[in-house]
Image 1: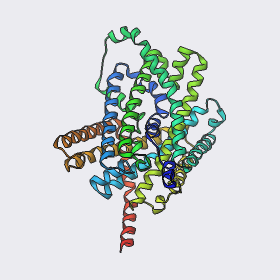
Image 2: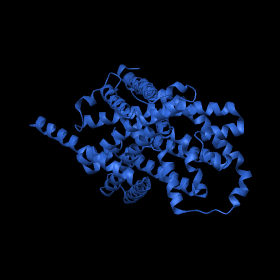
Image 3: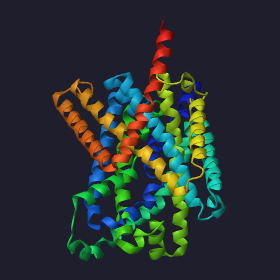
Image 4: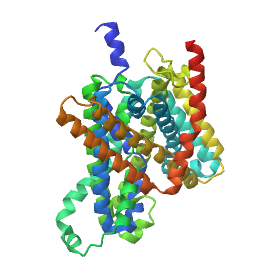
Amino acid sequence: MAPAAERRNQSSVGFWMATALVAGNMIGSGIFLLPAALAPFRADNLPGWLLTSIGAITLAAVFAQLSRSIPGAGGPYAYTREAFGDLAGFSVAWGYWVSIWVGNAAITTGAVGYIGEFMPWMVATPLNTALSSLFFLWVFTFVNCAGIRAAGWTQAVTTLLKLTPIVAAAALFLTRVPSWGQVAAAPQHFTLGGTAAVATLALWAMLGFESATVPADKVRDARRTVPRATMFGTVLTALLSAAACGAVLLLVPAGRLAASTAPFADLAADVWGLGAARAVSVFAAISALGALNGWILLQGELPRAMARDGLFIPAFARTSKRGTPIVALVATSVLVTILVALNIRRSLVGVFTFFVLLATTASLVAYLASALALLRLSAAGRAGTSRTARIAFGTLGVLGAIYSLAALAGAGREAVLWGVVLLAAGLPVYMVLRRRRAVADR
């Protein structure tokens, strides 16, 4: 193999690693806690899950088509910038980037919470929790600094491991379907508010279907691979997550489930015994750490794409011989470290909830902007050459935008207000960067 081709293979990933990035980032710690949050809604779970699955797959299709029309790195940032210009692109990228590293603070904190069941000293005090969180943060930062192949293999292995309890629960769901005839025949009382709440909660546990589009220039045959990995990873995750949650909701008594801190472990204990329950807790910790690895990859790749276009700190565009944006990775992990340190006096649950609130809203704004970008590019004839294609992709953009708006409404007023504050905080940064670029161009 020629040296150049060898270097490309060392700094790129294929279909399965790209799929693992999508599925691994979607399946974090949220899915393992989700059934307890859904327990009070009972009959509203089915329509809520249907809405979430349809919405997630629709948005995945939006990103799949955008990745074909606008190949290259950047994901939501690149698509928004192409359709609406530098300011819109920067605003979306700023919010999305902050949501990634704020979310990473939440993920590493959640992972420590799971591991604390086996190593209680990690969560004995807020200081211990913070130090343990930072340990895992920097371990996976260094893994990503070794190159996208190292991060990709880590993601592939952790994704396979985390899927084990979910696949087992989904299989249990399918094998027990015949015995649920009486449940299906019982009177069902659906409510609009309950369905909307279920749809929003389920979406919060499935964010990340756009993950393969951000480092697209490091994916082999990206124009073909990224759309396939995005759709396959999203559909697989949606089906398995819905079936697995369904098994927990139907087999664990509602009263016990609503108070549970480990719903999948409760299911495993009831069906297979205490040993299986302990194993599920291990898999939950692996799931959170795997998601942390994948999102750390994105926390370096997004600012790299922005800096390459002259819209962020120039040093973030620098890469190692393996194409790794080490400066961007390390600098962003420093920000996560500061964030964790600033919240060191909060309880684990309080820290996790605050971080998730910020991260989710910014992600939804990025989804909305990407759907509108597809709509605009379709109208301009850039997302399809035939009239039929323009209409189809334009309709897809409209549906994606409607779903994103509905999800934002379901997130609540406080989340939306935090999202506005987050986006506004980036405007001064944009003005400084724009002024410096103007001076440099003279």
